[in-house]
Length: 133
Image (cartoon, rainbow, N blue to C red; front, side):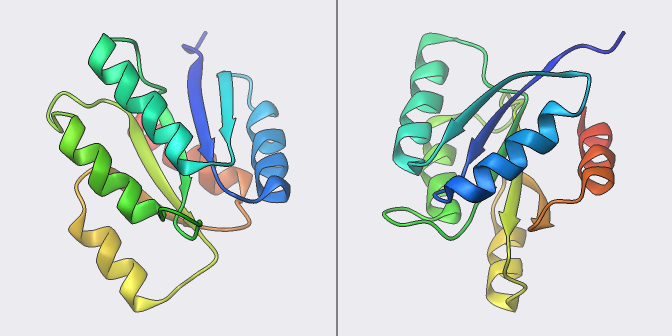
């Protein structure tokens, strides 16, 4: 039996969150799923966990187009708080954008390991999860 994997979904769209959470719930080895509409709330939770030595989620599905702070700003702030060599959480960028600027920003950052287009495809998501387990 595969170890259960915990996820954070961070997206300001309730519809996207519902779809993504529903998709994850169809996968038998998915454990706890925490959903955040507010990126700052999720960032504060991850920083708190880092500071207190609490296990981070195994994966984060992070939208890049959000109010207040976007996904790349989220990653920049998180990079300042964690040691990237010890940070085991895998961050997947979610976007409906295929702008070159977004791809270049993804390539420059250190913590996110995948760039996925919305709406998510279950088979592609499973492939990426397996790749980074």
